[in-house]
Structure formats: C-alpha cells, structure tokens
Length: 435
Picture (cartoon, rainbow, N blue to C red):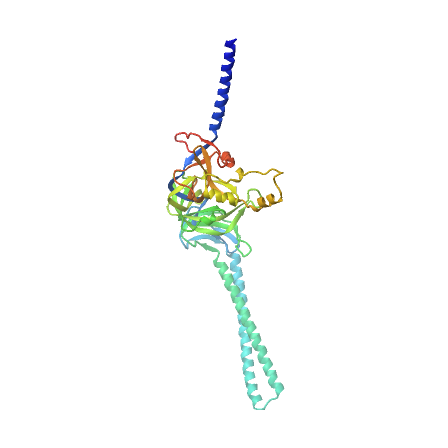
C-alpha cells in the first residue's frame, strides 16, 4: 500500500515537472526571426531599364515624288558615301509636267510684255494730257479719261507680273520634282534596311502622309540604347550619369555608357487595362565601340544615379512602417524601449467609452513612421530611422541607428505583425547563405 502511494506521489511530481518545463520552454521560445547587423559599406543606387539598340545617327530614305523605281543600284548592308546614287525613278511624266509649265511660263511672259508696252504708252499719254490740262488747253473730262486709262493699264500690267511669278514658281517646282527622281545618299553610312524593288511605285512623302520608307542609312560607328524608365524613377535620372549596358547577345560582357537624352513626354502603354504603365524614353550612348553590335538588339541598362562611400546600411527588407499617434511618437523618440506602437495601446471597452473619450481618440492623428526592429536581450524594439539611397539589397540609414545593431530582416509575414516588445528567437544563419 505504501509502495502504491509512493508511486502515485512520484508520478504527480513528474507531471508537475513536465508542465513547468513546458511553460519555461514556451516562454523562452518566442517568435522565430532572421536578423542581421547594421554595417558600413559602399552603396550604389541604380535605376534599371530595358530597351533596344539603335545607331545614334540614321536617316530614313523616302521619295518626295510618286513614280516608278527603274534603277536600284544598292543592297542591304552596303556601305555608301554622301552623294552616292541610291534610287532612280521614272522621269517621263515629270518631264512632261516640266515642259507644260515651261510653255505656260513662256505664254504668260509674252502677255506680260504686251501689258508692259500698253502701260508705258498709257503713262506717256497721261503725262502729256496732264501738261495740257495744267495749261488749260483740255477739259476736265478729257484729262480724267486719260487718267482712267493710265490706272487701268497699270493694274493690268501688275496683275500680269504676278501671274508671271506664279508661272515661274510652277516651273521651278516641276524642275525640282524632276531632279528628285534621282535620290542621293545624305550621309556616310551603311544601308541597314532596304524595302524597295525595281518596278515598284514609290509613294511620295506629303504633309498628310509620311510615305514609304525605301531604306535606312545608319552610322554604325556610334550606337545608343533607347530604354523605358518608369515614372516613379525618372526624377533620379540626369544627363551625364554613367551606366552599365548588358546586351542579351553578349551575356558575359558589360559595356560602359552615359545618359545622353531624357524624354520630356510620357509614353503610356496598355492604357485602360490593369497592365497600364507610364514610362519616359531615355537614350544611353555607348562609350565602347564593338563591331559585333547590331541595330535592334535587346539590352538592359543600369543607370548609376547616386553612390555613398562607407554608409551605414541594413537590408532593404528590414524597413517597416508603423502608425504612431503624436504622444506615442514622442515617447518613442525619448525612450526607444517603450516603442509607443498603436498596436500595443489599451483598447477601451464600450462601457468605458464616453463622448469625451471618443473625441480625444479622434483628435489624435496617426502618423506613418519608418523604422526597424532592433533585437536586444531576446526582445525587439521599434526604432524610427531616416533612410537615404538604396541598391538592389541594402538601404542607407542616415539617422536613428548605430553600427552593429542587430535588426530583424524577415520573414516578411512576421515583420508585418511584429510588435514592439515581442520576444523573439533569432534563427541560426546557415554558413554561406544570405538572408
């Protein structure tokens, strides 16, 4: 019997010890987090964008007159010099137009000469009648008739002069159109695009249409990359900034570049859809020459917008936002151990809330504060910080944190719900593995 009682007592002690051990263990466990130390290192802020390569100088060749192509002495990929013959168009119709305008011009010039003779005769007659009228030898009616004849011949002559000028302009235009049947190269370069055939009708470029591009001549000695930069980052980009260009066709090579031009007009893509985006065109000039680069190749550009040497940095994932009221914010700044988080504030019961309490609660405006959770003695403390530039991994801390402080960097879901004063357990970081 005594043996049975002893066994019962010993069993009870074991149960009590197990319960106590579980309580102690659970109290020490806390929330598992990842943490890293704030450290000083060089940081480079970059804006990344993708685009395509094109020659910096290129010209699209179009016809200024509508005519059939009868000669095409060049091929795609051929090098040409300024003034070389590119295209010859049919001249029959334009030659007839020139002849017709020449006949019209000759006729109007002859009629103008006749009008000029009539005007000179009327002018002489008017001057003679004017002298006789001043001497009182002719009547008013006769003098007025001479003046009317003079004015009429003068206006007729001036009208014919204007008609002559119009006919001369038409003739010069027809002559110019005929000269445009031979298209010459406007620059030195290479024909990088050719879309024309002998016998094809070349459509003229007008004020209402651009016409068909027959070919493109490019200067392949200087290339540029045209990229689309998101509107949220365009303010960081300035002309003259250095860049790193990676061409998809050369995966193991990086080319140096510089920002040459920044567009002032936004380009909106997929307007009205969930994928709508607003970008700005930015041109990056290659500083390295490479004969293997071809127009139209895809490229990715990293624009160096800012840099800091030996800046205090933490991983970008460590930065969190918390809503604080003015009193809590002041308390947090005075004593970082208190935290002052809204989440830890006492929530009044319905019976405790009267009109004055609700009014005071509403009067406290919450403010979003940027900060990090610092791990110390197994607990986290929310510390407000001010940040600077950031790279792909780290962000600069300009104030609020000391070097060596251990900050929580994850997991993301845990950071979203983590509160000031929570007990945590920092998980061991595997050797060689980044958080």
